[in-house]
Each structure stands twice: as structure tokens, then as C-alpha cells.
Length: 184
Image (spheres, rainbow, N blue to C red):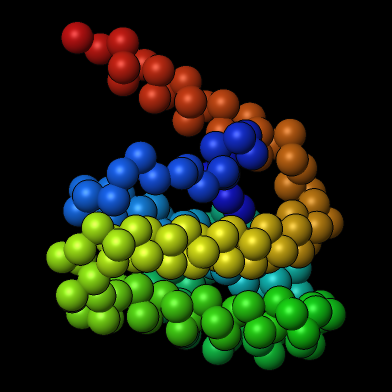
């Protein structure tokens, strides 16, 4: 599930300039959304395994599943999710394509983005193009994440986890953040 239920925070900001720092900021935002997306897939896979498991559901069972599944790479998660999802849940061909494209984009961003744009990084126009490319990739990740989150929320709701329960946990996180800010 996305880290923010306040959809105002989901908007992709406009760049303030085209300097190197701005490129790094959008690169960081892109990697952040890749992590959110990955965590969403973890939540989906855990939900599927809990929902369709014959084992007695318990906190320790859930903790073990998370521990095991969170070690997987994005490619491994997708490889495991595809048959699970196809077996139990109908997903659109568009989402199926998005999942594959996000994996390709993730590998490109993490392994090749700056190498591919080595000359671009040296020019105003090139950095502007890099930022725009990152913004488009972030948009694609967010779109796929919303679809995965919708499936996951439905699944978790059937397991008894409500939006209110999730919101309560998010409120606790905000309270903890406020407490940290208030420390001197």
C-alpha cells in the first residue's frame, strides 16, 4: 500500500530548475516510488498467501511471510506474483504489461540511467530531458501502484483489514514523526 493516503502528496512536482541537484532529486523520487511499488507487491503477495493458505492465520505466520517475501527482488516478486494472481485474481492485460515495463524501467533507472545520460547531464537541455523522463517514469510507477493497491486493499479487506485500520497506523506514524520534530 502506498505510504501516503493523502493524495495531494502523490502529485509529481514540477522542476524548479535544471541543475544537477534537481536531477538527483527526481532520481531519488523515482527510486522512492519504485520502493513503494515493490512494497505494494510484497503486500499483495503476502495477502494472496494468507488468503489462500490452509495454515492457521496468526501474527507469527504473517511475520514469517513478510520476512521471507521482503528478501525478494522486484523480478522475483513479479515471477512469483504472476502465477498466484492468475490463479486467483483476474487482472487487466494493461496491468500485466505495466508490471513488466516497471521491472524494465527499474533496471534501467538503477543500472543505466546516468550512464545513458552522461552527455545530457552536462547541458541544461539534457538535464531538462532527464528530469522529464524521470517524471514520466514516476507517473507510470504511480499508476501501476494504484492498480496493485486496489487489488491488495480488496484482498486485505476480505481478510478483515479495513482502510480505517490502515489509517490508524498511518496516524501513529505521523504522531511519531511529530514527536521526533518536537525533541530538542
